[in-house]
Image 1 (tube, chains in turn yellow, purple):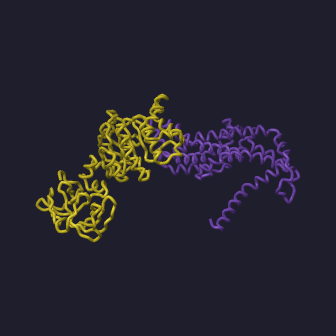
Image 2 (image 1 turned 60 degrees about the vertical axis):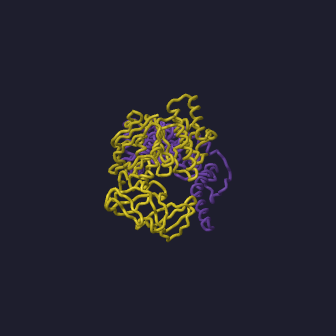
Image 3 (image 1 turned 90 degrees about the horizontal axis):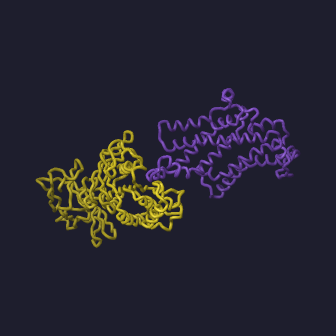
Length: 348
Length: 268
């Protein structure tokens, strides 16, 4: 078991900057998700930690040991790849045993560890088969079992669920969470799927343009995003942003008045499920364009002023397109964003 | 498939097969049909008599077995050299990006565009000087030059077909570069490498010009036949030709699965 310290790691590919001085600390046993859109540098960062890519500057420390210059094989970690990378010319047993054999473990220990990992991921019955005979989900399990069998200090996962279909993904997500909790392995998990990150991680590091823009618990990331980008990227539907102007410490939107941290042009951010529906006169005016019944709730898409907003209403609500409603907001569940920098005003 | 397209398809396949098979069949007919059948006209396409006398007599010609042995040595060496040199080049082409990569790819092929006839005299002189003239080793070196571009390009596409992640996974799980290659890449590439090796063998086995120029007594089979058969009766020539074809055809037939895999065509 070991924590990870990433100290000012930067990476350039020729003239293109992939990562700009990233620093990140992962505690022993913690599960951190690197979340971001494609091209944000999250996979590059993971590959640098693994040693598959060499950083341009900065260092990586795994459990007190500076591994920056070490080969992947010397770093004492395991990795699950996006396309599984389960060796096709070996049986499932040999795949799971691969890391142990490379470490020179005796046959008895290999046998015991493989059985244990296989039991954890429910692949005991496939141990004698070749990967070609397995489905995507089963191969995924083999890849995870191979990684867990070596009892790594650090486990790296690169979009491990993205090649599975939606239902299987949901199932594997729940299973991964319980398996990894049980193993207590320090894990870094790369994903572009915010629901995966929300569901699995102790902390989420949201990456954008080679930076970590926010690192915090899933709930804080969700309710108090550090920037407009984070609010728009995390959560489904994304956070709503309404442009307004504050004077004398407050902003007036239709029938409601909200205290703002600064005066002048400012952006109000709020979550779709935090808005209560009232009549048009007493709330912030919201003109409904589309109403989509989602089963568990009713998703309303429309405009507040000129800004697009999505509101989550109870499924029993009877509202059609074209209606104008009022929205009431809880002042503790909103954020204020500086329109120039896109950053959230602190303390709001 | 619509009827006209199917008709076109079947005709095309048949034409291609005939293009390859009819000459081989006629050579076989000439080799086994005996002295008279060779001169008969119109030719009968069905074998009138099948006798192995010409073939047997041919195999008794003095020097045939020695020449065959030389061919075997030269072809085996060619196979060895082209894989030992070609596979690493192919791996480098597949895995590393370096300046001038596409130029290198082209240059590799250009060695085949250089006419051997121009090279023949200087090569003979050099080979005499260094003592390689009239040896199977000397012949195999030239044949390696012919087979190497093919070996490098084919193995490069072979290695490209093996996902990089396999290797990376092996590294992460404790392999050095060489171990990862030996334990993961090589087993996966082996059938294709074997096919490339056998192709190099066939190239050497069939090559006649360089072999004729660079040998006098220690002829390879093709060079020997070319020299001897020009003075032999026609049905002996057919027998010689037939014996030359057979090993290549058998080789290619044996590795056809891998040749198809190598070229990205799936075989059933």
